[in-house]
Image (tube, rainbow, N blue to C red):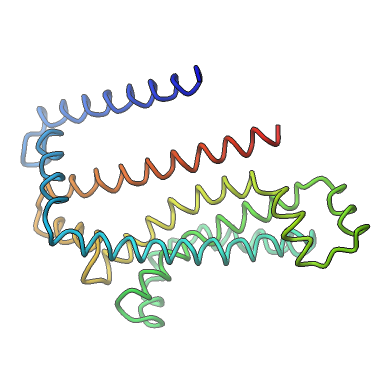
Length: 249
């Protein structure tokens, strides 16, 4: 309870400090380059009340959920499969790291050619951001499982599917949860980037439109809304991560 209160106090202090720095920057730069925190929050509130905003938020939410589901499913399948075979994992890990280091924006023309402009392209572009980190965390989690678990599965003559679902996945879940937290953030970024460069609806599209028209309040309001959502979701995932690691320890 004390640790939880301390974390909340630290988080609140961080928010206050950031708002103070934001306000100070506004006083220095002026309204041409940045809007004040109060004006930005008021604009964000008006944006949320605008009925035209909801379809864009729904579009982004739907694309993100689909992209995250694909990233988790494909990433776990790749990671668990490679992690179960040490040789395959050692061969595939440098390849995955190399793919992870490639700027994903360079792949967007290929995504557009394959899926066209619209929801499929956004989902695919978001998913490719999350697949590799989830795969890497899942693979290393399985590789770090105590050998006694796998020996027990062989003694019990479990099938590969049963071994994966009953032994590998539960034992590797704490590390996988960390990978899911990283994959969540990157998938969200990928989905928004997909909307910024090749969509007619969504929060990324609104952000790009506001940037092209130099609407400072809209840019910052959208940024605040996205950061708030990402921070809240990451706080929940971090709590799950700590709980799972606490059970292991």
